[in-house]
Image (cartoon, rainbow, N blue to C red; front, top):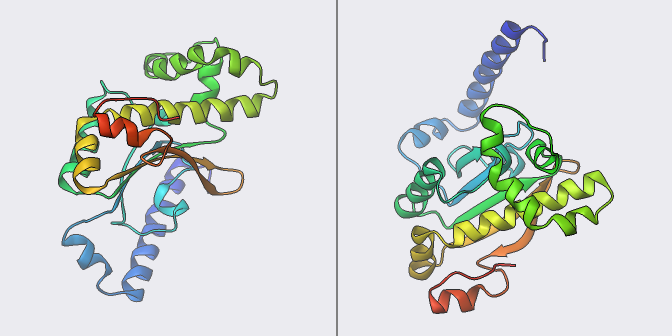
Length: 219
């Protein structure tokens, strides 16, 4: 893309026009059907990183995935934005899957591993991820390779987020009443693959936790 900001924006508009024309030619009912409503089966909770566009990497189409993304895919029980997305997707859209996805080469993960400040509101936002780092400092310190350490904290961040999701009352009700599934995943930017980390409703120990109606570890 051009280094000129105006050219970049104009290119994006031109690309959109070409895409819309192609989709309409391919299927004249595509956009009218989208305009009539949505019934996605997946709620995707991911990172805002430009290299992780969920619909593209999943090979899906507009209308297939309900999406919420933020810096470092942090799931906090006190974040009303995330909570509102979860409640709408699970209680109203009746999605069948909640997918939390971290990724490799995550800037938020790298920042959390560093003792340096990022600055502004970002330091406050990354507090939960730094708490994950502190909770696993010995394990992380034992990993000598910087990239491998960043991947591991990204996995641990997904684990922490899945624990928050599994403690969410709206999600708990949907699991019991209609079999909602919760998944923890990691997108490898280097190869384009999404890895299932085996967390959530399919994780070890979940059945016992759900049977007793209280939270327990998911990994």
